[in-house]
Every structure is written in structure tokens, then in C-alpha cells.
Image 1 (cartoon, rainbow, N blue to C red):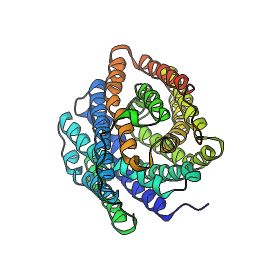
Image 2 (tube, rainbow, N blue to C red):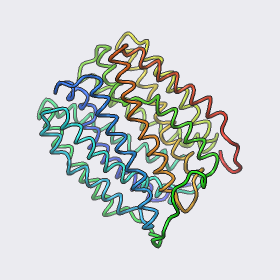
Image 3 (cartoon, one colour):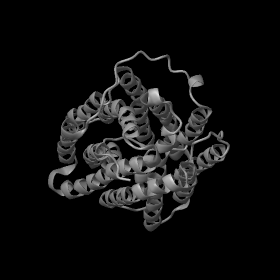
Image 4 (cartoon, rainbow, N blue to C red):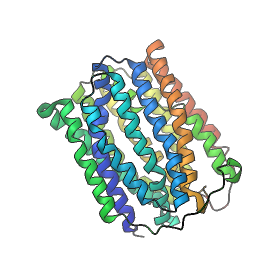
Length: 381
């Protein structure tokens, strides 16, 4: 079954935006360190950034359901981050980077739930895994090209020049929305207060599991710092991150198909286990080559879990409040990302990276065991 054209258009939007974002992202941890920040400060910046993103996801989701439209939030959420690039390019203090990440992730928060809801509305139910897998593949292809462009541009324009140039693909993303992303808006309508009791037991259970798993999640910035700690140069870290994103992109769509055939619960549960294995590996790795191998295994986790968890979530939410339920899920996860990043950074700084990664692996295994106790609901894979 061929996916609707709108899915491909949304994938192209994410492709261009991730080119812009990932030109910047792998350089940020080392840029922060160069400005005088330590591991705990990196954790603070990334925790605030991701928490901000997720707090605004419920805002964007509720507002989108209320007005009955997704496209205005896509334009706002993808358009604003392009305007914030000068703040980063001109940064001279760690708090400047913190402010940039806050504003940039606010835009991401506003667009995520409406976009994911639009994917769920456009895709046939029997192809949700492939639809979200394709979107993640396009998103991650952009994330592959972004660091590669950064690597090529660094010797020519320097770090700050890369930050300036990253605004160009962000503008292309907005152009695709204006030209090719279409929807059929619903009439505006009032919404009842967002109460968990109104959602299914499966949705509430997945919120609990996801909350525990989120405490295991450190920012990818820590993986990049760990690669550097294992002996890779700045250029080497950026290239490995590019390789990770390429593997992630290539695996996302076929793994989405696996989820459609074998069940999305298999894909999500497997993601918990692979994540734990990766973090145990990073805890005990001693050579750069081991770090590279673990990043490839991490790509397998990302490809299985990022698309699979979104598709699984789409099977648990009510028809009339898709963006609200998706936004609430992402908000809960994002609120917990701040203490998760602070905990990971604090453990690393106080007790070393091995302790931090081991703790993350243990929490991931706990989430997997709780996921096995999910309520049985008819009609869900």
C-alpha cells in the first residue's frame, strides 16, 4: 500500500529542518566546553532545552485540537527556530547557548504534536508503522546530512559560520509547508479539561513506563562527550554522529514495516532492551572502535523505538483529541528530561561516566519489565 503524498511532504519538511538542526547539534557540547562549561552545565542546557520542547508540545497539541487545524502550528514551529540562529552564532557565554536552546526548542514543542497527529490522520491504520518509520527516516536523513555539511564547512567558515549557514535549510523547510503540506481543517470546538481518567488504561500505562524510561535517557550530547573521552577528535565525533544518523535513517522504514507485521509492542519492547545494552557497553568501553560500534547499535534502538513508540501511541489515543494526547505524552517525557539530564551529568561529574551509563541501563531494564505488564486491549498490536 502506497502512503499518502502528505506523509512524504511532512517527511521532506523534517528532512530540511534536521539538516539545519544537526549542522549545529554535534558542535554544541564542545562549543559549550570551549566557553567554559563543564559536564553538569551541559546537562543543564540540554535538560532545559528538552524540557522546554516538551512543555510546549502539550500547548501546541491542545491549541491544534481546539482550532481544528495542524498547519498553522507547523509554520510557527518550523519558522521560529530559523530566526534564532544569530543568537547562537554570536554567543560568548554559556547562558547565551542556554537561551538559544530554549527558544529553538520552544518552536519544536509547538510543532511536534500537531505534526504527529497529522501523520496519524493521513496514514491508514494498517500502515502506521511504515508512516512513522518513513517520517523518522526522512528526519534522520537530514540529521545525517547536517553533521556532514558541518564537517565540510568547519575548515572554511569555522563553528560560528556553520551556525549562520544553518538558517538556510530551515527556510527551505518552511517553504515546503507553504507549497505542499495540505490538510482539511475541522471546525473549531471547545475541549474538555485534559484528565488522564478519560484516556485508556493502555495509554496511562504507557505514560508510566515512558516516565521511568525517560529517567534513563541522557542527551545524545553525553554520548558525543563519551566518544571524545574514548579518544575521538572533534572531527571524528562529528563523523561518527553522521554515521549513526545514516544507519538510523536506513533502518527506520524497514523496522516500521516489521512493527506493522509483528506488532508494535515487539518493536517498543526491543527498543528498551537494546538501549540498556548500549548504555552498559558505553559504561565499560575502553577504545574508540568500541564507541563507534555502540553508536551503530544505538542507531538500531533509535530506528526501532522512535518511530515504533509514536505508532504504538497512536493506537492508544482517542480520535477527537489526537494532538492533545500526543502532546501530553511528550510533555510528561520532556518534564522528566530535565532531572534525567541533571542526574546523568551530576553522576558523571561526581562518580565518572561508567556510573552514569550503568544507572541509565538499569532504569531502561526496569521500564522494559513494567512494559511487559501492559493491559491487554483488543485491536492493538
